[in-house]
Image 1 (cartoon, rainbow, N blue to C red):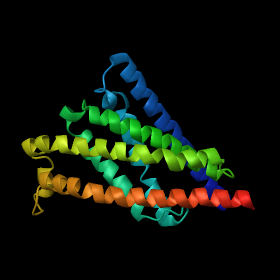
Image 2 (image 1 turned 180 degrees about the horizontal axis):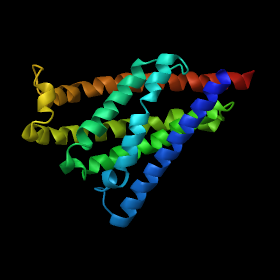
Image 3 (image 1 turned 60 degrees about the horizontal axis):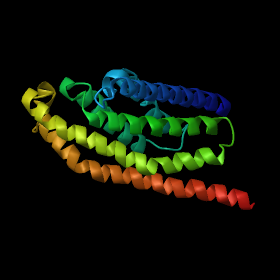
Length: 217
């Protein structure tokens, strides 16, 4: 059973690695042909939406206990990205040419190529130190850049959300509008982001320390 779960996890993480690599290539090709930051969603939005939907499996992995991540942190990350991607960027056409999407997609793509390839290598044996080091170091600058891009787009979206009265039917049963919801999300985002960021920094210290302890043995 452990071998079967490892094979499944390797396949999943390898597929995500390839998917994010394709997305990054599409973004860079689009940028090189147009010399503009405005085409990231048009060039890679479809595949990134697909990859993000598939990433809900990571919440299930945590719930089933086949990975040690638990449920809360993967759900927070998946929920934040999915809201940004599917509810805002995918719904408000006027924002799909925003440079903030280029910034976010590039940061996501690089981070995920590194993260998923590291996970895939871990499923087939001892992960090389260089992969562990890159996995737990590159996020330090990339994660804040990605979050800044997400917040920038959500802030830009507020005007369109109010004008279009977006998701009016869904929020009609609630005592607040979607516009108010996004304002609250923007206020909470730095706190939620910091929780995830500190968790990753703690993981980094733990992973790198374990490697150095093994070298001494």
